[in-house]
Length: 475
Image 1 (tube, rainbow, N blue to C red):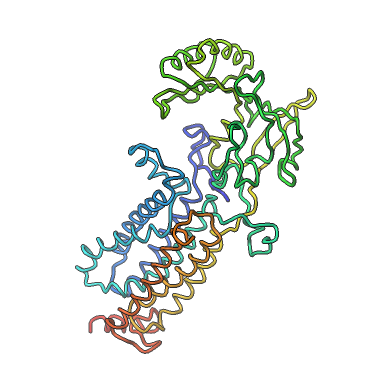
Image 2: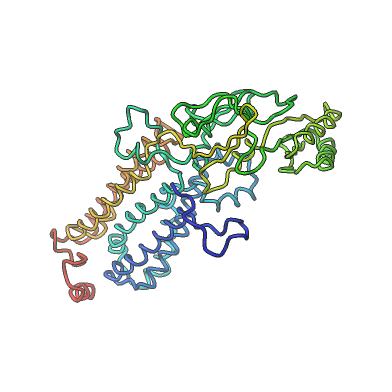
């Protein structure tokens, strides 16, 4: 996993301060587009489509495909991630595909719409046979999916189910199935024990975000709310780094583990509390309205004394406001920056300050992204080899539909996705539809398209010369 491949030279010191990042996911999307336009231009020329027109089609299908993939993702995960967002925020979130948010099958619908538009306004005018073009681009779709899934792996999304210890011999799971946890999308799969909001989140109930749990705290009356480690997970990077139960975390990533005051209640008294906070040296981290028409303010303090003095003044506003105390560790992890994997802590132990640095990693997941990359590379070779053996135009595209539907149905069975009717995921149901459509399409093409003996197709992409192809096209 490598969310950020590198930062562009000579861009550090600006916004963002580390420089302009080149994301692994975006780089793979660009590489996919590059491969499709270069390889596709040569293949599409065989059916009479000029290279510049192929590039136009690739751009259109790329944009509409990404849009469709994002839309299907937002529909599939609406209840989990997008419910309650305003229409404006839904539009803004729509463009944040780097947050692990596209579904390939959605790109079929979006790309299909883009193709229909291109066919109507371009292909018909050029008298291009759509089924011949489909056979030409089918292998490119397969290699595009292979490269795209590398982007998913670099981004840390689209992982599979947790691989139990007995499952470790499954190919590539032990070697490639662990991700840097803090930067991984897997850490979003969290649960909170009732009444223990200040605890670090748990991944599928199997691990904490950082490899340790915290001692329970009285968030209403805490004298020193900075985190104290309760237990270390056995076999984790936190244990290897030397963390111990009882360590109090006083620095996080080179900054003081600041104290956080969280104030909520009616708008007027919270506004008064906000004035008290800023007057006593507090830094406002967040301020906004709540769902019940109230207001919430989150402030940070580097000084424990200032935080406790402010807290005492805020007590005079009770019961119109509620005040909770916790520390910066929670806030930093909650808003963890993309691309950063390691965490640097300074803990206080028996009066001594001890620096600790490590990279928390997830439990082992099935690397379904890698499985799909391998599967699609093999499928690309299969489709290219099948070109000269197809009996009619469109048969290579049918092969892509059938093979990918089978692969995706099986691969989906070891992924973590919400299920619907009969215990199948949305993508599994779409796989069933794609497979059925492929069979019906093959029946239609056998009836409607000219037949050719195996190995003698006029557009065999290598079986005949370009001159022969052009003569056949003229006839």
